[in-house]
Image (tube, rainbow, N blue to C red):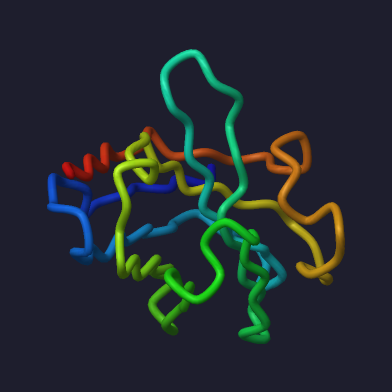
Length: 126
């Protein structure tokens, strides 16, 4: 059973930084795409970034130049968030899917992801 556990959320002032971590366990193969999504109350869940085992990453336009996604060999995926804005305030979720190709125009569709973490709150104050 795949489990994803997020950590690193919190409160920060506008312009600040946070790093989220997603620890994965239970993978039965090495071909997974790991992504970060975010969701505000009453809003649709939005894809933020995804990374494959080859290190290739795709980021949403809204976070390009401010967020980066990375992964280490211990199956921990990070989302480094810099220059945070109040509109980045959301619950951030880690998600994973089994796939060989993690890039492409539809890679951040929520329907493609099989496994989800519980989420971690990020609050950015102005």
